[in-house]
Image (cartoon, rainbow, N blue to C red; front, side):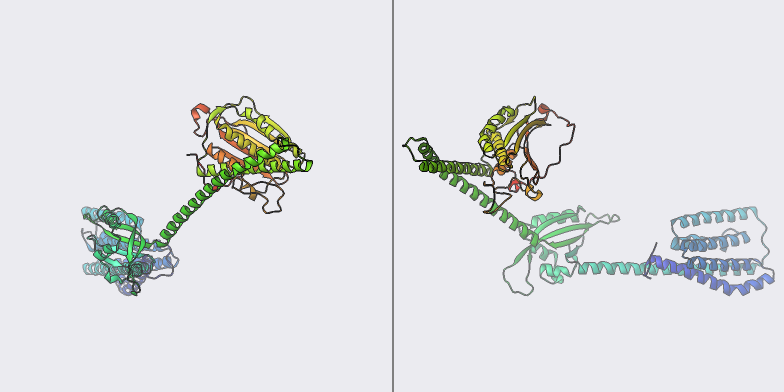
Length: 589
């Protein structure tokens, strides 16, 4: 156990105590050695043996301590005390002599400076010493030739030395833990006083025992002005029941509780007369003492000011409400404008078509050309208005699906014929790759036709002249895979991630090459989401784009038991992630 640099830690004090014991043992042995030598010359061997053994143990344990073998040094001191006690017990065969008392000092010393293994070993050795003393007393072994006075003096001297070592050890260890406890209390007090959140400690009766310095800033008053009643009065009247219930659960039930309340904050400077309420998160932690039989516990409360977070939450809710209102207003605006434009545009397209057909009379070539341009522009505007109306319906959740079973392969040819004129204009080749034995799809056929036409129109528009656009249809697990591929201009990864955003186009500004409103793929994304399907896109600049639509075979509410599961033999290539359309999924109401 490393405890470097702090002399007040118990481990360091334990090591210093071991060193002091070794020094004390060497000193006492050195002082008693002349008397032991004198008694040895007069014929008494036991004092010399005990003194020499104590001196040797002191020097050895000091050496072990200097080599940082602290556990071995502690074991040497404990074993030496047990061995010396055993030796004196065997010298005096009477049961209950001073040697046995010295041996009892061994487990006491082990309890003070040793670890658990040494403590267990010391008690085992003590039992052995007692057994030897009892055996020697019962067998009446011949006593060692030593004068009674010398034996008594030796016993007293060794017992006093052992007692001095144990007392010195106990005093040092006790001082170590007192210092340690004081340092711990000082550290805790420093932590409480300097923590940013307010800390209040309640007694088991609910009285305030301690309030931190930071609570003064939180409540706007001095800490000595706080009491149980004043603290309750500070809590908003609507939040008091929650506070009292949580405190009772912590105080009586011993359960930790965290909740948020509104609390009055005073103005310490008196600059304002109107009280200010702040949001505070309160964490109640009961101080559970298993030794106490009382049902009430002390409670430590931590008060954290969360007013800024609450203000941000309110601002976010308000911003969301404003955004939703703006989105609804935009949808209403688009729907109104679309309906207002559709009627005059139908008249413009109809009359221009009548003029080109000669119903109102023959036109000159110039007038016929002008009428054709008017007819073409009117049809383009009608298509734009139709897309605006569809998008506004989808955003408002008013686009109703008429889901019925139909064969998807039957709509491929009509959709290709509808865009054939556009493809011929750009010299684009159209082809279809339809798998066999396809199941019927439960979906809105009109919406599926619109999805396919928008994908085909988009692919033709961004294809190179003499390019190729391919429509593929196959089953993929519980869905039908409808893909439209081209070998046109392609898109960059950052543009690919924004597919499905309304009015988004890769080329912005007045210098763009391709016409359009940027609503085609956003409508496709909305219709696919209404069917609970998935829209995927893969593209590479200059190599073309593949847009894939996965539609559940059994419709939006797919039934697995009727559809079954199909394990693909190969993995589909990972498609780029599509950006959420308007950050929400539109659902039909």
